[in-house]
Length: 136
Image (cartoon, rainbow, N blue to C red; front, side):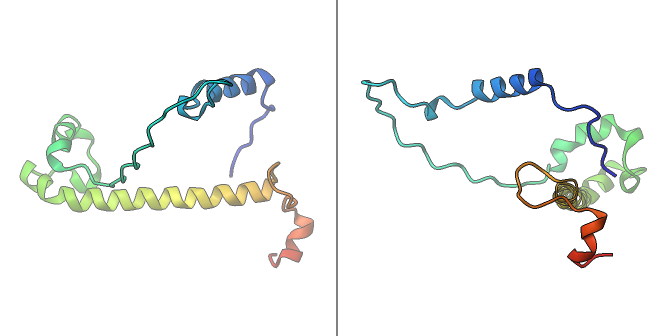
């Protein structure tokens, strides 16, 4: 169950958030002052993001340091066994984490729908109208 904040956001907090957003706005998006010209080069194409699991050689120092706290599947293995097991283990963990995140995204959408939001014209779900939505 999601716990909603016990008090509304304060105007001081909202002001800080607005200032932070304003301060971090990219300068490239700002319009030049009236009467000034701006010769900007075209932006380069964004680099393609590549997801890659951490290789064993990079994880090895961490695994050695945390040897006593390794997850069950990696506990008690020799360094050679760890190196062999690493690619499969890290891939499975990565998939499990991404599945949990995706489930969290879906949960967030349901909570927003259920508790209502200010960015949709749809009413919040209530016990009274849930029957008309096909649920019981």
